[in-house]
Length: 385
Image 1: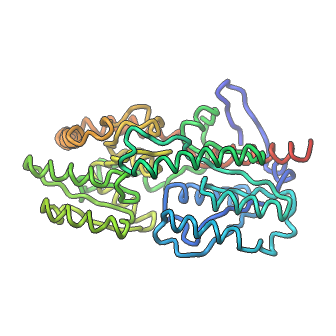
Image 2 (image 1 turned 180 degrees about the vertical axis):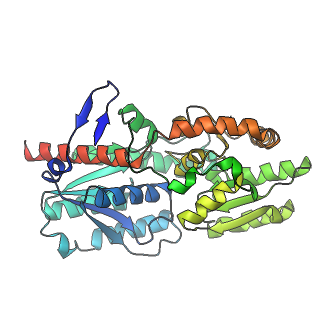
Image 3 (image 1 turned 90 degrees about the vertical axis):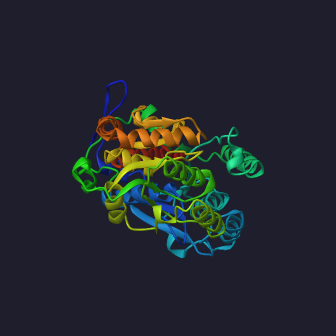
């Protein structure tokens, strides 16, 4: 593959030259990958390319436990299990040609990667999806929780620096700045998603994909639907993703209070093809989240040519401002924007097409390639070459 850098120069490198540097990749994950966050989905896509395209020996180091509700308690449980779990005997012969990936900055993931690396003389790396949290709207997660997350990130960064563990800033803006602009072969999304969005029957007015939580804008979306109903506009909403057990009671209470239960269809976690079908059957993708590092679901929707209404966050830079942005936390503005898009849908589709072209530059094949070249360089420096 030929990769073009931002300065126009090209790097040409065959797969064998990379395989000579290292051959094994171990990825730390929980017992139920692909159900907690975009980060889990993200590493799953990358792992497929590591193994199927570049033929690396990819292994998953799974931490088992009660992680249906991923919260502070389960994080502590995962950390304890990561410390106590013996290193798999199958890793013993892998040696120094092994990269051990902590795909997220949770303590259990980093500690487990360090433990395995030291046991087999491998090389740990850590992915950080974003390094800063919004204090302006921290009340959505709670000031204490936001502060803990913030200082935990700082502590983890210091820990990685002391142990000289390479860090990958794993978000779309960073990859763009690194010059990963020429994309070939595998795209980040299913090819069927390229169907003409305008020709598909719309069963839903609005769609949301992700964990249905307060800081993800769940309450804001409910209020938007309520406001639309008050203005004599009934909308059907498809929600794809898990609703936390404790939060579910509040959601049900609000839906009943506003008499909009029939407006919402909750699908839970479904497979990728079902997700694509529902997305393409929706007129608008609404994402009123207060904090994002990347948001693959927003990128999915934009790639399919679906008009996006979202709060104005830096994470969505990959759409080049070609979406219907709303000031963060402004529910009335979100309501009027959704209404405007529905009433002027042909114009919204034109803007969505510009967003689709903008996000089409991002491709997992080249992102994986960038990682592999970086891993190779890390191994070379470690060996003193």
